[in-house]
Length: 272
Image (cartoon, rainbow, N blue to C red):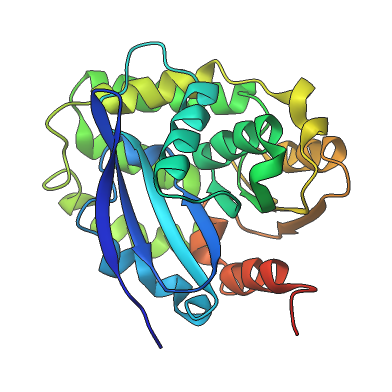
């Protein structure tokens, strides 16, 4: 299998956007990660990030993008989507499928509604069409942890909000070690991403999404809520919805069939 794992960056104005890419297929899958990208970009992680996508790398070129390195104050999710278009143009990617996770799913909604002609298929995972009260509470608490410089508490809070009780039994054993590594030099990117989430609302534009769309969520999601997935399903024409019982916001990590569901959707009606 030609894994063809590589990484790089693309200029965007006076800054750049980091990416990790793997595979050599003719079809493009773009992956947009969640708020954790505000703490660390994909730079230097291509080998690790490629693992879940190995089954499709003969047919797809998979590229995971960070947000631009220098995020200006007041940037919106729509701005981030336009940055993504700029980079796709620079890389010669005219059409693509997009997998957006959490905040990445918010950017993906903006991209799919504003540029429907660029979209083949859309997968929205544990995301929402707007910042509901549950989301605002979580993101505000995390930003307060960052402002105090309490990286350990930030990691604990995000874990407690994201994982299922079963996963937390194992994860809590690591709490004494959290905060020792992974602290960014600055939380500026984290704040900019967080504020973009707090102001996000695209409900009125969701009907502009015309590509086949799969929505994956967790019934026990404590960050966006299962109702957010149902709202997306109700407003995106022809969309499909699956909610994982017993799982929350980290369903994309915990569900053993998450990627097989994504791959089946990407390849549906594409077999020759």
